[in-house]
Length: 231
Image 1: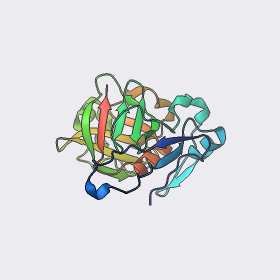
Image 2: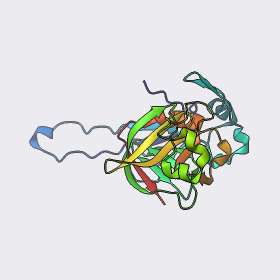
Image 3: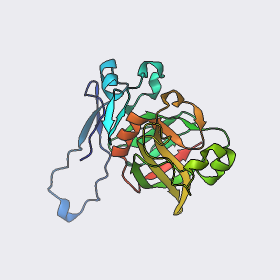
């Protein structure tokens, strides 16, 4: 069962779910017009009490994820529900690279938004893809190109089986693997212990989230979901 870890209901904004009625026919005559479903969800930034819960310590997979000092993070990068600005279909994941935001589009005109860190200049990727595979507490296997640039990573190479899961693993608590045209892009959405990197361009091409946020994201995004990365 998917757990909605979003903050408690506070300010509600009623949104009418979009839907199109089929054309009239003789079989439809005399039937009452269906009433649109009203979807009410909290919109906007969480309160301090909610942030303490959202970014507090988390025990997961045998690891104790430490709390995040969210007071030191720009509030725009807190996980929060917003009016969907993307126009994409529900279930789509969108990475807005310039703004450092990731959206998961929801039915009814809203989206869950997360702050992210993105790849340095020259390591970024863009386009349309599919979340082909997902992994909780993944092993990190740096590509051979990265090992060539940083020989100290050779012990974690693909040939050597990668780095074991854990709090120091660069992929963090979850990883979502992006494929395009059936091939691995080597591009990931993943957790990371370095909360200071959120909102910045520091990683080697991948999109990183705070561990507490990537756990929430993992629960909302199924395998084979469409993803769009915009530059």
